[in-house]
Amino acid sequence: MSTAIKTRIIKIGNSQGIRIPKLLLEQSGLEGEVEIDLEGNHLTIRSVVHPRAGWDEALAKMSENGDDVLLDDVTPTEWDESEWEW
Image (cartoon, rainbow, N blue to C red; front, side, top):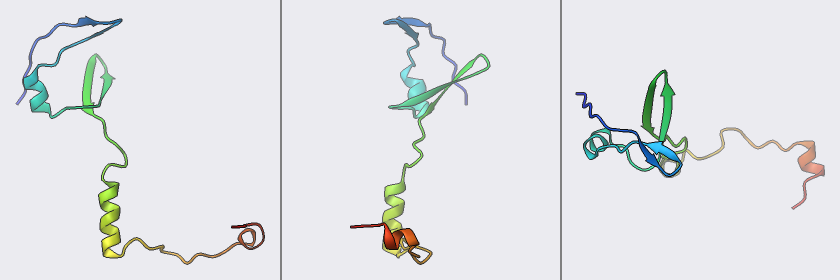
């Protein structure tokens, strides 16, 4: 279902902007930080996707399941043997 509402571009400081009606914000679920993209003559507003969102929970679950171990054995190199100091 599409909801089109007319609004005006207004001056906001040195910039211009629009006020997004509450109804559209509620229907879109947008809040906080958003991205605005220009596609032809359309502006698209979408929630910011954080690339590492949910990693804390996923890693905690891996730890609970014992899936947080190295897959390969650690093989020291010559550099590790001769150059590395603690």
